[in-house]
Image 1 (cartoon, rainbow, N blue to C red):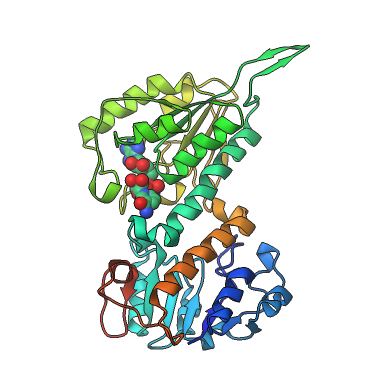
Image 2: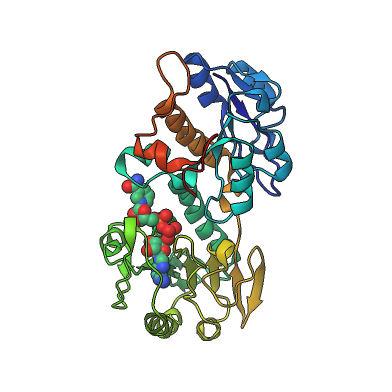
Length: 362
Ligand code: NAD
């Protein structure tokens, strides 16, 4: 059984699926690893480091298991063969065509997004590892774009008040954003529609904004709000947002467009020089004035919506992602170094989105 590491082709994607340390671990377990030349270059990892770790440089598509970060292009799907295994972010909820193409090609595909959010699978949870990177980088971007300091400064030339930071949607990315903003000296507040999040928000030194809406859904995710709830939420947030220098939004509902939390009127009410960082751009954005992938200035407020923040920190993002993939591969590896997935295992069953003979889920 061999593993192939591809060179990512998506625009702006700088991560690599396996770093040399993890390659060394797999080789040590008797699993040969074939790395496409230049696979790690964007993460500043030259081919030689992979060779030193025991990999060979060659055609990753000749391997039994192909690992990658971003979903494959049509051309890359064309290089896969029936019975071959593929592991990576495959956007199973959004990329129906690609999933159909993988199924027609007879590929056994595992989407890391579909790994259940259960304690046993935390080590494989690539959504979480990458959301941590995004939450951190969102704050750094906000600080960069802000016309004001984050920390309180007492200087001979006067005292500067700390920045007030509001995080809307406190899942993994939001919690990391609150923690990072706090470390930078900001005065932080968190808001979510799942009431159980209040305790987590307080645990990272932030205040909890309570708007009295409970929209906890299934599996720890939020449900979509009703029209009445949405109107109430938007109005309440419009009032609250005025007093914040920085608003970071990360609110998502699985399989649905991003909820609109920040209206144009809310942006208009913010002080000039304030910043909105919208991490929900890929599904339309949490802010009405967001232009996904762009940084715009509206009503003297800077609104930025980066689309793939983890790719901007390729070294640590790849390191964490590699460890997620290693754990998933180890779950399927038998004592003879062969991949023998146990479809009775809920992690294997949930993450497998196509099989050679049938579509398992999507
Ligand atoms: P996510 O990215 O799907 O959503 C981000 C946040 O947006 C969520 O907290 C959600 O409640 C919130 N949200 C949605 N609609 C909203 C609205 N209208 N207004 C305000 N907030 C809104 O979330 P995630 O980071 O992927 O986390 C999802 C769940 O998985 C959480 O319960 C998290 O604790 C859980 N989780 C569990 C594990 C584990 O045990 N293995 C690991 C990671 C996450």
